[in-house]
View 1 (cartoon, helix red, strand yellow):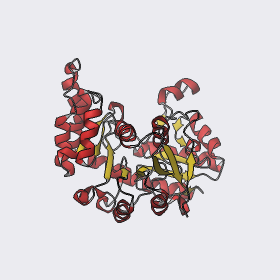
View 2 (cartoon, one colour):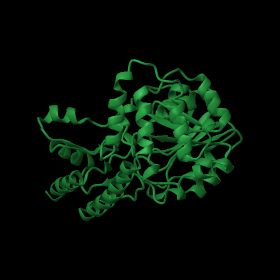
View 3 (cartoon, helix red, strand yellow):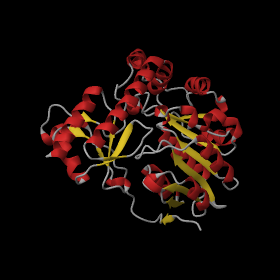
View 4 (spheres, one colour):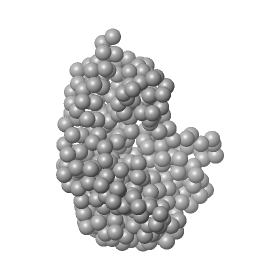
Length: 366
C-alpha cells in the first residue's frame, strides 16, 4: 500500500527561511563578536587562491560573461569524469532545480515524490509549477525511505528527489540503493540526487552514482560550490543530466545566469586541491568532535556524512537556540523543517567549535 501525503498546491506560499546573519545578531543584541554555525558554510571561508582570482578579474565585471559558462563546464567535465554535454552550470544548484520542475513536470497532471523534513526548495518549486507534491514519511531514526519513494511513484511521477547527504539530518543513501531505485522507477521518471554535501562523505565512491554515470538513463545529479568550495555568496552550482534533457534546459534558460566572477572563482576553486583537502579534514574532525561532545552533554545526536550535525538537546530546543543567540552563537533551529525538538549546527573552525561546546555546555548544565 502506498504511503504518502499530498500537499495541495493552491495555498499560501511558505517563504524559505534563511539562517540569521552575523550583522542581524550584532545589531539586535549589541554584540561585537558573533559565531555563525547555521548555514552550512565553509569553515575556512573562501580560498586565498580564489580571492586573488576574483581580484584579478574584478575590472572585467562590466563585461557580459560567456553564455552557459563553457570554460567551467569543461573543467567540471574533466574533474568529475562525465561528458561536457551532460553538464549544466547554474546560478546555484537552485536554478537547476527550478528549471527541472518547469521543464520536466506538467502542471495539473504530474507529481513529484520527496520525503518529509527535507529541503523546502522542492516543495516551493512544486507549488510554483502547479505540480502535486507527494511527501513520503521517513524510516526509523530519519532513515531515507527509498523503498517508500518507489512505491509512491506512478505513471505521472516526473521526478523522485533524494538529497544525499540529507539536509538537515546528514543521512546518506548508498550508491547500490540509488541504483536500485533508479531501476524500478516508472518510464520517463527522473531520479534527482541532490549532492550538495557529497564532498564530505567517506568513502565518496560508496555514495555517489556519478562514477557509474553511463549505466543510468534517468539520473540527474546536482552539486554546488557553496559548501566545500566556499562560494556560497557567488551562487554557482551545476547539474549532471542526460544529454537530451540537458540540451532542452540549456536552450530554454534565460541568458547569463552565472556571472563572470562566479565562473572564474569556480574554476580556480576546482583547481585548488590544497584548500579543498584542508576543508574536508577540518569538517570531518569537527563533526566527530561535535558528536562526541554533544552526546557527553546529554544530547541525542544523529550520525552524519555532511558538514553539520543534527541533535536534540535535553532542554527545549527553541530555548537553547535563543540562549545561544544572546551569547553570540547562531545555530539553526529545525522547526521550519518540521523538527521542533532538534537543532542543526555546522562545523566551524576549531576555536569556533570549542566555543560553541563550552557555551552550550554551560546552558545545558545551568
